[in-house]
Amino acid sequence: MHQLTLAEIARGLADKKFSSEELTKVLLARITQLDPQLNSFISLTEELALEQAKAADVRRANGESGALLGAPIAHKDLFCTQGIRTSCGSKMLDNFKAPYDATVVSKLAAAGTVTLGKTNMDEFAMGSANESSWYGAVKNPWNLEHVPGGSSGGSAAAVAARLLPAATATDTGGSIRQPAAFTNLTGLKPTYGRVSRWGMIAYASSLDQGGPLARTAEDCAILLQGMAGFDPNDSTSIDEPVPDYAAGLNGSLQGLRIGVPKEYFGAGLDSRIADLIQNSIKELQKLGAVIKEISLPNMQHAIPAYYVIAPAEASSNLSRFDGVRFGHRCEDPKNLEDLYKRSRGEGFGAEVQRRIMVGAYALSAGYYDAYYLKAQKIRRLVKNDFMTAFNEVDIILGPTTPNPAWKLGAKNSDPVAAYLEDVYTITANLAGLPGLSMPAGFVDGLPVGVQLLAPYFQEGRLLNVAHQYQLNTDWHTRTPTGF
Image 1 (cartoon, rainbow, N blue to C red):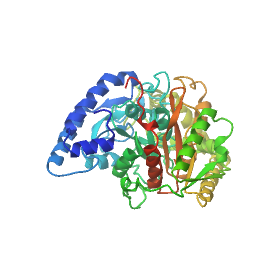
Image 2 (image 1 turned 120 degrees about the vertical axis):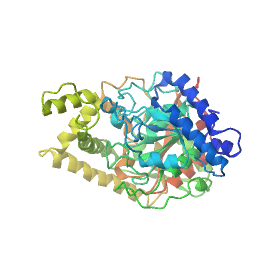
Image 3 (image 1 turned 90 degrees about the vertical axis):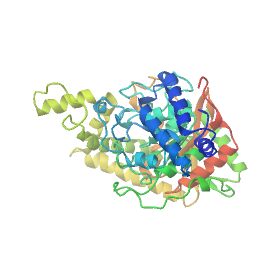
């Protein structure tokens, strides 16, 4: 049962081949047995899962149907879940139980999903390796000595190891797409505003976006259907109709114009990954796509702009964690200043502290114009590059990451080296565009992803291309040894 995709689970439940309760028990036992190797979960919610599974079975017995009714998933541990610990991978929130459900959680629960638990993540979603979590690093099931990517590494590792069919994740600079590439999954970052951020603990509010992580584009379409939609509680949510993503998967790619930016294939890209990307291009050409070289001239400025904007927003968002109202509080504070300093010093890890300091510096009176304002101008140039490109092409294709997953600890002493791994993914967040990563092959036994970007609200186009590609390749069907 653990090898079934979301789509296969939906068909199996509809045909009464098994019940949601039976499936849930199998997966909970598998998590208990295998997750100690991976550390992909922070919290298991066995009691809730069995309760939801039984309720889903009753709903099906009463004639209800739905692709997500009775489907087991997990939530990245920054989606608030009522009465359940929501830690953000941080000591700061280790004792925090959310008093309400995030919109994503409540929408998926209403659709009938079964929550198996909360997955591990980089602390406050800050990282590209899932090594900054207070609960310890997550291991990549393809090689336990390597990182699974971040910040959604727990969700990615759990799905890749077949502990569950799909999971929610978030993407601020590539945190869905990069772990998907590192663990042989399909991951989709929707258009900014497509999925509600209400109840999703913020890192950088103008960049954060929730999305699905699964093994196939078809499964991502099913999960996104349940997550997407307008939310009046979120002022950045877009009131735009949600199409039937699954219905659009089988469209022809004949005449589809694919742009390949020349800047993607410069220094820094592993030549073996470049070869796999070219192979993916050939597969899409066989399906009728037309390839065109394009240029994104301001891409070179994206990383420095991102690492000013994101920490600036983080320094503002994380100021609420002060030891006063909720979260970690130091012992016996001498006064209010001591309470703030020690609570934050003890509660936040090194990477979070580093980004708060960078952000506070960039926003300070003497440096706002020199750094933050300039970064926002670069952000507009990056967006303009994409708008120009999408006048000529329908989607943009390239590598998801410049290198395969690195060894645990390999970049801990050089955070900038880890930041540079986001070079292909952060532009979509700066521009607010939808992006998808899908499996494209292996380098030294480690998975590699190919990234697709599309115009605003064209998630269906990305899913269609990925689904057609997956009908003609088998990379996404490979399973890590031992899982």
